[in-house]
Image (tube, rainbow, N blue to C red; front, side):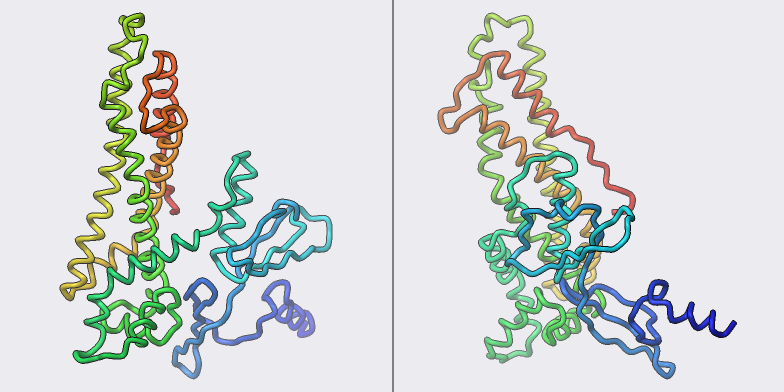
Length: 340
């Protein structure tokens, strides 16, 4: 009996190969690390460990052509047996695991896509860093004691937003009341919100161009007189498209305004509103991501049909077809998943 129990307790398949004792919890600390908590002589201690995200695949060819960001290495391990999952895929970072999952999802559903969407453009990342740096300059001034002149320390504090394991990150969270365990999700959320601000800023000019056409005489079909009986219906369609666009823009502005207001209270010395906003940022991401995606698709559809700055007028049938495509793109159901 003791032999059987010993075989069960030491079964790596059931309990894993890590023999570390007293683990009571763990959470994601950064893109590459987790923080592990252990109970040791009645006290809770913690230490940080590298973590390699992974998933299983039924067919290794699914990842053909996948190039991780920064050409980061990943491992494709062939599994034995005849079970459904034939491969184990291991990554060095969460961001590239998520990119690989997105690639698999897009291809499984038959979507054509530009592989660049799987990676954050270096120029975009530089711009996000610049925007955040400008945004938190007042915070850095507060985080250091009056008279602090060490520029390298300030630069390291900015870098800590990208790596919460740095000692400067601990100084930051202590100075402004964010729990250390919240550093990684809060910092990630901050970068995420700034990314969406950048996306909104990038889309706005083309969006304004599309709205200007929809509200102008150019949107009246060149053969309107021949379709006089159907023009009221087309005009209602036009109003519907404009309304859908304005509603999405207003929703994004409302979310980003809440962020700006929370940030102002943060600058004033009260971090609770900002941290509360960032804690719930995942649901905000879903709404912002949906709106940005829909509006970008609508802009692409519009500029495929209407080549600015000429703003040519279309036929009645072409205008109706354009509105139908825009309506389909802007009216997609987008309920936030209950588990999101």
